[in-house]
Image 1 (cartoon, rainbow, N blue to C red):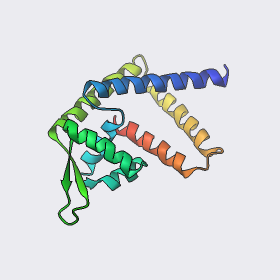
Image 2 (spheres, rainbow, N blue to C red):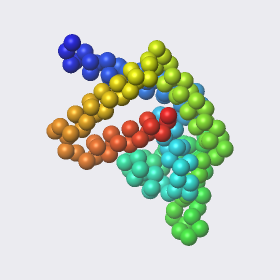
Image 3 (cartoon, helix red, strand yellow):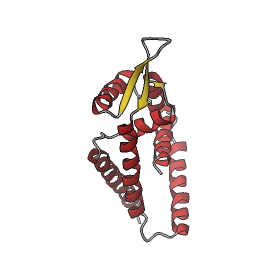
Length: 162
């Protein structure tokens, strides 16, 4: 079997999974990427927009636009910092917590469907292969720290959704 066919299957699986997860998010009124923002804010209650932007490796203006949309939808609230009125502290609302809970449930269903008819041994073997593939591509010819941060955040995000 040639490498191109294998890579094509990996990419197809990634696209299909992201599509299903995106559909799950949309069914709850969330846009792509917002569930991970809710996760971070929930785990880092009263964090700032700057802390969120640093975690996501995106610009503060990009975060501000997304947060404005999330606040308007009622998923988060921005509270003025008592010690520095220029800062806004972020909290997840009850609506946001409920949406995140439902999103996790839908993701769990998708992930369960993905591994129907796989034994625990097969899943462990697949995990071993995937880690080797990630190590191969991360260590060869990729000196960009930015790429490694993005890769790490995607891995962290996928583990948070479990």
